[in-house]
Amino acid sequence: MITRKELINEYIEFFKEKGHQEIPSASLVPENDPTVLFTTAGMHPLVPYLLGEKHPLGKRIVDVQKCIRTGDIEEVGDTTHHTFFEMLGNWSMGDYFKKEAIEWSFEFLTKVLNIPIERLAVSVFGGDNRESKVPIDNEATQIWKNIGIPKERIALIKGGIYESENNWWGPAGTTGPCGPDTEMFYWKLNNIPAPRIFNPEDNNWVEIWNDVLMQYNKDSKGNYNKAQQKNIDTGMGVERTVAILNKLEDNYLTSMWKPIIEEIEKLSNKKYKNYQKEMRIIADHIKASVFIISDGVTPSNTLRGYVLRRLIRRAIRLSKKIGIEKKQDLITPIVEKIINIYSDTYQELKINKQKIIEELNKEAEKFENTLDNGLKEFQKMIDKDNQITAKDAFLLFQSYGFPIEMTSELANEKGVKIDIEGFNNELKKHQELSKTLSAGTFKSGLADNSIATTKLHTAAHLLLAAIRMELKNDSIMQKGSNITSERLRLDFNFDRKLTKEELERIEDRVNAEIQKSCEVIREEMSPEEAFKQGAIGAFEHKYGSCITVYRIDGFSKEICAGPHVKNTCELGKFKIQKEEASSSGIRRIKAILK
Image 1 (cartoon, rainbow, N blue to C red):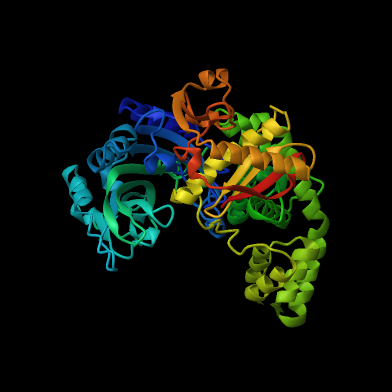
Image 2: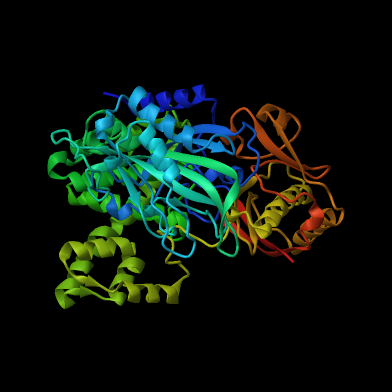
């Protein structure tokens, strides 16, 4: 049986031989990017470089990236969808383009992984009917034909370029790099030969790799112009590919899932074949929760914490449904299996093991205490009206801790209607919880590389330096940030509220540095050299042997991926709007530029 580790090693080594430099996986919590709640693809940490920033390791990059996607949560339970997954990727940032990307993809699939060409098919961007008039990607089609893919196995996907399923990617924000993509599919059935003609609608064709071919740049007027820097951004799902290589039609039978499934079988005294959907969801949701907690998120009713809470509570409900009793330790044995599978790649899992178990158990216990009563109340509601009203749903949420998605799932199981819209209205009356939480999309952010976000990014560096100076505390570090085109938000470790006078002096320090018209200098060096020179930063592990440091002489020196202004005089006037607690031992400052 081919393992995930073997696949990852084969992939990394193949692209290293093609001149790529390996980088470690980034955190699941994106740095300085409020456009998503979680890292959903390998391209997120590389957005500045796809937008033109120079990467310290060069133009060719390869990695395996841990990812979370919340849009597929409702699909989890089938054989292929997962909340947490690993994505293999190789990138060209202004270097090679379509021919090499496609040819190397084909070479890796057929020569290294030995996948028969008879089981492969591809899709290509088939043009756009809307106002952009972006043409069919005939170049990609011809490259596939030249290397042996028959025309019957090449599907031209025609449609609006604003829909990702139509073989188009981007831009990440409202403007910027974008382009067509070409996707590779594998015929998953072992007992039925692949049909001669590729039908993308046939679910037996499973997508395993996607090459994004960024050849356009969308401007503020909506025009798609040929890009000065053409990029390649690819992604291959580890879970699906491992299943394919082992001739398995169920991802959960692979070595990265089977030990977890077997533990759930043992705890429930049930067989996987009889409870496939429930066991898949429990395994998936606990695994995702382990990785999310390891990267610093804890359960709450907002943002990432809400997604985490929803995952844990759904797993707990289904564990009870299949017979795992409250007195049994569900968490510890499953966490141990997950860490055994992944700790060779992600050392942070071992380091954070106790924290992970404690947070999971704390949330599980909190929910278990109200779960039985909540289920009884739910049954009373449908017995009374054969529906779940908005007030019913809100009562289950507020008094019994039922995420609305769970109540909706229960209602669907019972075949009764639920007033989701009314629930959202009820919720707005009591607290601000955006309906976009599960989708995880927000306006603006680093991904759009706008002038406003670039200025605020530099201002965040000045703010952190000013805080450290004013409080005379070199142990203060950034613990999170969120930058939109309107404002910046900086989290930092400190154990008390800052006084009004301290905040005024911090603000004055930043503005004084702006008025000096200081040059913002970009340098590349090893992490060791950066720390030797006094640079600070919590994200240096992402960039391998060479990192980028931005310095403002005599004031700030930080490890950062950018982007930044050239001179502080570009920033305008800095103004602190609010200082508050973010969590225990963490303070938060919100600020703007006028």
